Structures are given as C-alpha cells and as structure tokens.
Amino acid sequence: MLHPFMGIEHWDRVGLSVEESAKRLQRIAYADRRSMRLEAGHMTARPEYEVKGALARFTWQDSEFYNQFRNRCKQLRMGVRAFEKCPDDALDTLMTKILESSNTLNLLVALFEVLKPAMIEAVNRYLSEAQPLVDEPTIHLLQHQLIDRKGQMVWGEQAIAHFMASASREEKVSAERWKLYIQALLQAAGGIDGCEDKGVVDPCLIVSTEPFQLPFTSTRDNRYQTSVVKMKGMTFEDNNEGRFLQMMLSRYFEMSPAEGVAYVHFSTEGKPWSFYHDTARHLWDEVRHCWFGEAALRSKGYDVHAIPNWTGWYDMTSQLFNDDEAYTHLTIAIEKAAMKYPPGKREEWEFCRDVVQDPLMTTFQDFDWADEVVHAGFGQKWIIDELFHGDNVKALDAAELTVAKRAVYMDSFDKEGNVPPPGGFAGNY
Image (cartoon, rainbow, N blue to C red; front, top):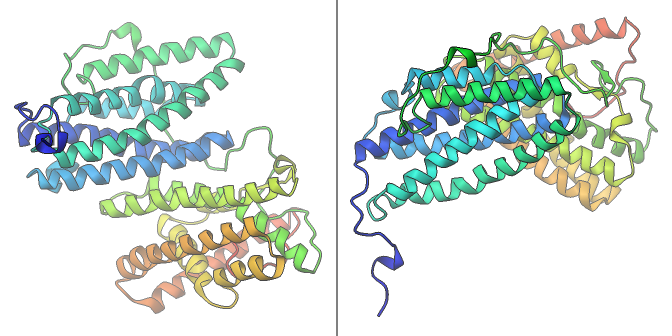
C-alpha cells in the first residue's frame, strides 16, 4: 500500500493559521529586503574585491527571497501595502545598525554570526510548525531558499576566518563588542520572526555609530592600482589579438558599472518594488560579467592585480550623474545601443567564436549578450516607459546628454595627465 499524502509526514499537525503564517513570513521578508539594500550599499563601500562580488550576489539572492515572500503573502490574504510596512520598530533598529557597521570585519560578523543564522533559525522554526498539507507552497519555497541561505553562511564563515587571521587585537575586540550589540538588538526584536522572548538592550552593550554613506569615490584594496580613465596607459596592437585583449579587459572592468548599479539601487527612493528587484539582478549580472573577464584573463596567464583597475563608472555615478541619468546612461546609451548589429553584442560573440576561436570567451560573450538583452529591457521599462512615459525620442535625447557629460568629465582627467582610452567598439562600457 502506498503511503497516504505522498509520504508527507506530520499530516495531522494543526499548524499555523493563515494570519500567523503571513505575519511570520512578513518579518523574515522584511529582514531580507533590508539585507538586500545594505549589501548593495556596502558593496560600494567595502574595498575588498571578493567581498564586493559576494555582497552583489547576496543582494540578488535576498531580493529573490523577498519577491517570493511578497507573492506568497498575497496568497495568504496579506495586501501588498500591509506586507511592505515595517512589522516591528525593533527590527528596523536592528537592520539600521547592521547597515552602520564601520568596517568589513564588523559587517561580516553582524551578517554571518548574528543576522543570517537567526534568519535560518526562523525559517527552520516555520518549517517545523507549519501544517504540511495546507501550507505546502510555503514549505516548498522555504526548503529551496535554505540551499542559498546555507550557501551564504559557508562563504561568510570562510570570509570571517580570513579576516580574523590578519586582524589586530583591537579589531578583534571591536568585532566581538559589535557582535554582542547586534545580538542584543536581535533579542530586543524577539528574534527575526518575533517568536522569542523580547529583551532589553543593556546600555553597556551599545556601540555608537555613524549614519552609513555611499563613498564619493570607488573603493579598492591595496592590491590594486586604479584609474578613472579606462585602460589608462595601455596600448594595443591594431589586430585581432589587440581587440581580443580589449574585450577581456572590458569585461573585467565591469566591477565599476556594477558599483554604479549598486549606487542607484541603494540611493533611489520611491520606486515600485520591481525596480529594486530588477536592479538587484542587474547588479549581480555586472559582477558576473567582471568575473567573465577576470576568468578569461587568468586563463591566459595575466596577473589581474597588475592591471590598473577602472573605477570611472562609479565615480561618474557618484559625482556627475543623478540617479535617473546614471541608469539612463547605462541602460539606454550603452546597453540598448549594444543591441545593434553589427557591431554590438552579437558581433562580439561571433568574433570570439569565428575569428579568435576561443571557446571560453565565446561562452562568456554568449551569456553576456543574453544578459544585455535583459538589461536593455530594464532600460525600456524604467527609463523609456516609466521615466519618459514611452517617449523613445526623449529617452534617446537624454541618453545622448549623458554621453556628452561623460566626455567632458573624462576629458578633465585626461588634461591632468591620464592617458585617454584607446579606440574601442560598440557595446563597451
């Protein structure tokens, strides 16, 4: 005889009501959305390259978690307006303080020794108490979320061990004190899901903080030399090999556009949720594209730390453009223009496949092209349709103005002795 209910156990558990289910999920989701934003902000502020990349990935993953909860809570009779409200002032304080982490080690300790373990605990508590027949849709999404949540923890624990190994005694003491304070704030909220007894923060544990601010200029650790002007001091052979090297470098330099998207994501207020969901994906894509270039260069034997690292895109975003201009420049002036053929993204892929015949870079450019189609769609959605109400001509005019502003900005650095970037081809950042 087959097991009833497809083998689902605890089928006679009473479980949680619809209202209680939605309230718990809303609290976990709130922490995910705030995590998404603070990770994007610190992606720009933390100088360590590997930390930047990881925070971009977590921004995207946390946006996916929040989006799943948003959709599920609508099915559980919680309206979107109610869902998007802060469910607990104590949770708001907790997340604000984590945002105000003063350095990389403190941020990692707050995230991976306090917040994210508590979120996994809240997910597991929900799974252990939910009625498995009536709430199988939630159980299914939570079980799959746990794969990524545990993956985040693996990276976080390794990162903390790495930074602790070189930390001074003072830095370790600071991190431990910060951890105790964040733990106290978590307890004051009754845990992520509000199911634990609420405590009161001991005044002796309070650590003074400063409001978080996005950096004015791009941050890099001391392994890197930087250049606002792209490909500073570089010369290339006027042949296929020279163009191929430029292409690998152009992909590698996309960490700066990624930082620019993080800036837009963090600083833009009042947009619909889907804007933040889209820009979280966009941010992660740009980091992946940077890694395409880094992997290609490493495979050819290049020392990626010896190459002056381009920071001009973030610096333009921070110093030159407003938020709408920054995203217009990226999605319309650059990415939508790269859909033209030739040259554009298709031709870049064909060049790697047919001319250079490099299998690894062919795969990278194939997926780069696919991602850029998605990003051009973001430009259509958020710039042409939302900002310019469907007026393509006005959007293109605005994009051209950003190109002119960029030229003047970069020219000011050229006059200070930086080498102008060599000639490129359509689609380059």
